[in-house]
Image (tube, rainbow, N blue to C red):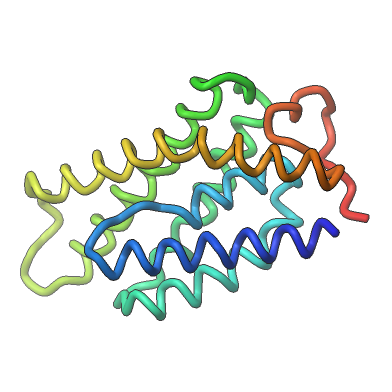
Length: 175
């Protein structure tokens, strides 16, 4: 049941990010889903569906670089750090890692775009800073809502919840 839940949520996040991205907005929905599942299930379980969804996302958004694939290891690192040292319950325990992931995805995406675009150099403009700050802000607002919604469904399905992660040291079993 864990795999069905993981694949369905990953696909939904990918679809939402494509729909929002086609309107010119950058909200890192798939990265936030990666944070949620890397914290609750462990990075080894979440890695394969996230990599596949990241490839599809980068292709659908016609990115000239594989942004999600380049930044996924950082998201997994943030999730592992937050699992060990952070607090997963409460609004701030969910908004802070969401903002970190949003900032990583926004700043990393802008930096990759700058490196690959001809003649622009690595200097950032105010627009680039605004994109990174908007990604961090949207992720900080979206992740607590996402975590609460997914936790309510996960509890009904008897799956591990984000706010209960620090009760155990090991990631949940995937049976």
